[in-house]
Length: 173
Image 1 (spheres, rainbow, N blue to C red):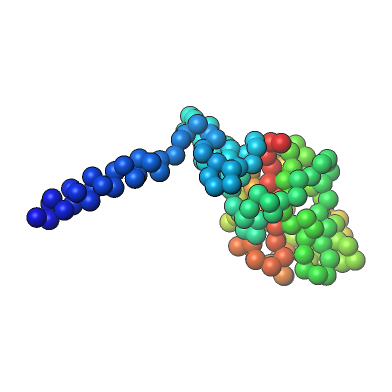
Image 2 (cartoon, rainbow, N blue to C red; image 1 turned 45 degrees about the vertical axis):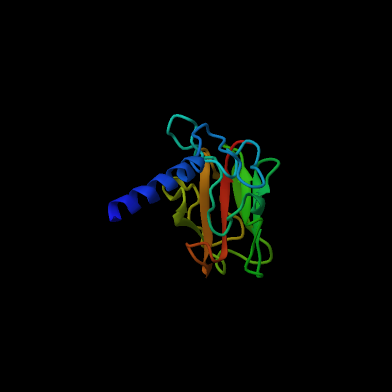
């Protein structure tokens, strides 16, 4: 009896599984509510059809877990400011490949809010952000590769994206 019950359960599950399969066309189905134009669709995968993942397609990286969390920069260099409210502004920013980002303290400095690149979020191995522990303005960090680059304040944030933390998303328009 048991093998027949298992077969019946599997047979009933197969049409449901087939209906839920995803396309590898790069755009996906868009999911409920559709997707962001040019980002591969929020409900689909980032597969370009050849099995490769588009590194500039959206993926949630704490604390910037939705497309809507990002401010789209309109030109380079892009400025990210921080102050004693323990916040980066904007903390989630989308830029184009080749653009630069400069961090600037507004009434404070990196001695109080040391900047550190994430070692665990996004594209940590390629993160161009380097530690800054003094002064009020960082060097200009150049982002040449599409991807997600996390950063945080060593004193007031975490590498997991909590507190004083943010993400630079480098992608196409």
